[in-house]
Amino acid sequence: MNIPNISNAHILVVGDVMLDRYWFGEVSRISPEAPVPVVHIGRTEERPGGAANVARNAAALGAQVALLSVAGTDEAGDSLARLMQHENIQVVLHRDSGLDTTIKLRVIGRQQQLLRIDFETWPGHEILQHKLADFERMLVDADVVILSDYGKGGLTHIQRMIALARASGKPVLVDPKGEDYDRYRGATLLTPNRSEFKQVAGSWKNEDELGAKAQRLREQLDLDALLVTRSEEGMTLFRAQETLHEPAQAREVFDVSGAGDTVIATLGVMLAAGASFHEAMQMANRAAGIVVGKLGTAVVSREELFG
Image (cartoon, rainbow, N blue to C red):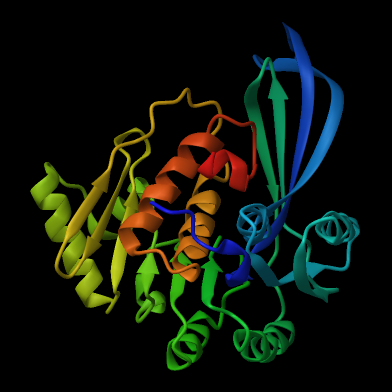
């Protein structure tokens, strides 16, 4: 396919942001206190995670990106805000004194993740109402809206956001979480991974059964399309008149952290640039194959994707 004009694509990302912290160390012995490894930390690293990682991925491809979210008035929130200053992204980050910024702390030893520790609370209702008002204002300039739901409370008003965007003629892509998919009704596209889809639709024995379950869910939720990402099995796009499948790119898988962020960001950018669903899926599948070869939440550059 021809490389689309991504520089004119405007993406609005809304959802749960978090701070991804990495502690890298060496493992040389087992603790005498419990049968666990002792990690001697040599260096640390911080990266924007969640919806912030979606926004970073869209910006890395060259799109014009705006990010709307909530963080705490704490040290982690300050770190996240500081990190986002270095990205080419318009950031509207509401700060809530009653909220602890979500932190995912990963301990890495011998190039493997040994432990993840999560810190999180839910944002206050008043902050979320302010965010909804900003959403209406920022929606005007968007070509595509991406709602990144990590189940942390930042998308309490997601049904209203979907309705506002669709009424404005803007496609809405949602990365879902949890079992209540009714809240995503009317979205353009949902991107559950294999385990998330199974949690909602139940297991399947073959491709025909998978297809039947996917089309049933798509119709129930009034979606234009449903994309199920399937790890080593690639990804499958279900629409009213067609089912399209892309096999996984043959690469060594190093870390799947944030791969879903890369997929939905690439889909959104490609659709905003005028690509078809099939073309967008092909590029998203290629981007996923690249990003799983990187450690932690990472981005795929325009050169990597189209080079």
